[in-house]
Length: 288
Image (tube, rainbow, N blue to C red; front, side, top):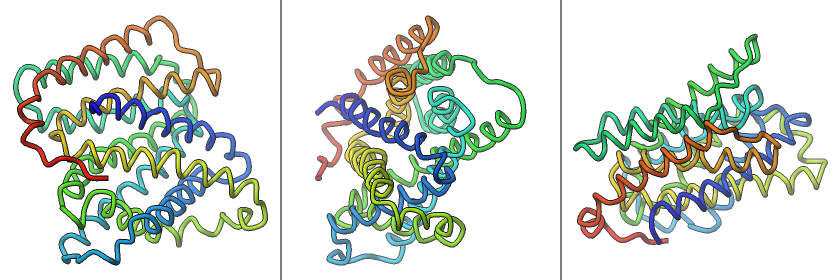
């Protein structure tokens, strides 16, 4: 399956989950919803991959654990951000993280042009619809933290994806477990209502599967197949899918400039996707 199509599937499931999560913010703090998403996803992944059957090195465990903590912080910051900003705008600003990775690791005119097109497209997709005040400031700080974590996720995720038997989705299971445990002391206390509400628990399971298990597992497949710069540019598909999901589920309708942004993102994907056939042939084939 082509990497861009995998990203479309990943983005659709991820932001359907995010749209569901927004509906819970009146019942649970956004940061707690994000932590529960990570914790539940970790349980699902551990049951699926059984990481205790794999031989781990200390460095492999450290990398997986650090990756998971960064991933968990990224999710918590993102959920705080979308509680204060429109979904499409938040994702667009968060994309500064992948742009930074692409700029630092990319090479050749295709990568550089792709970075410029993707960044321009994401800026247009943002819609420039920020309101002033404390809410906007809190949202911007949270999304800034999420952007930095997203950059770390790409770099560390590549290492986890390439770690052989102790990497990939198995490494993701260990990492998400570490992230969930690391943030539990700060965020688990507000999760008490979930223990007494079966409907709320079911929605959280759906959010965890849609926003964590499916997309992050798919991204581990892609991370084994493409370099970090190409992966970062492919991530430009996520703001586009976020805008679509925001329009359909949250009635946050795109305008004309956002359509131009979508065209620029598509051009960036097409441009960078044409340069990698030889590289892809040399990559380790994905294993799910």
